Length: 166
Ligand SMILES: Nc1ncnc2c1ncn2[C@@H]1O[C@H](COP(=O)(O)OP(=O)(O)OP(=O)(O)O)[C@@H](O)[C@H]1O
Ligand SMILES: O=C(O)C1=C[C@@H](O)[C@@H](O)[C@H](O)C1
Ligand SMILES: [Mg+2]
Image 1 (tube, rainbow, N blue to C red):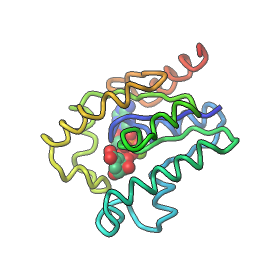
Image 2: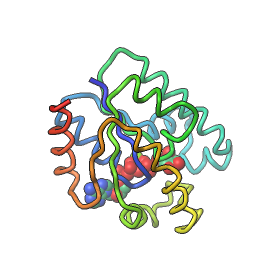
Image 3: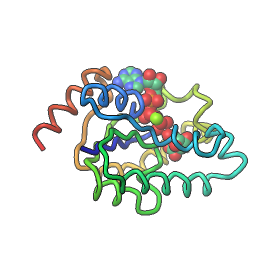
Image 4: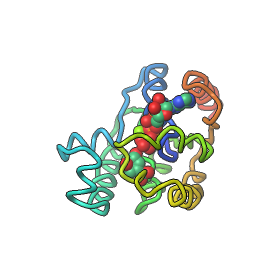
């Protein structure tokens, strides 16, 4: 089984993806971590030295490679992944997509002081606009799970319950 988590920065994709992979006994992959590994730079460094466009090309090419492989995984994507190129279509065609839905207030509280996300430097107002612009892409996911008020463990239990009913 291939499960792909999507959602805005700070929705908990990485946190919940790891837990979900343990519960499902399925390997965990994190697209941001794979990009960092492949390029040999941190995400802020890639944005600074190569630019966001190049980051998006690398992101999309690694995503495609993973989705076309014949193996199971729980994949946590980056916050922007579903909103570039035909990434969301590829995700939906080749895996079960899960939108971890969080409100903006929660996501901002979680990410505002984290220096590993270059887009946070845009500031709260611009980030809210980006959040609203991205929502329609996230809503293309097959499953929608509210991740605002639940602990990571309870969110994982909800995902498993919904996956079983698929
Ligand atoms: N359900 C939750 N309740 C409380 N805190 C959470 C929850 N999920 C994640 N967090 C915290 O929010 C922060 C961001 O979580 P995480 O890195 O998993 O988000 P992400 O969706 O992977 O973000 P990105 O798109 O930037 O990769 C972390 O500090 C994490 O511990
Ligand atoms: O929301 C975004 O566009 C991003 C989210 C992170 O996961 C990283 O992929 C990067 O910081 C960009
Ligand atoms: Mg993450």
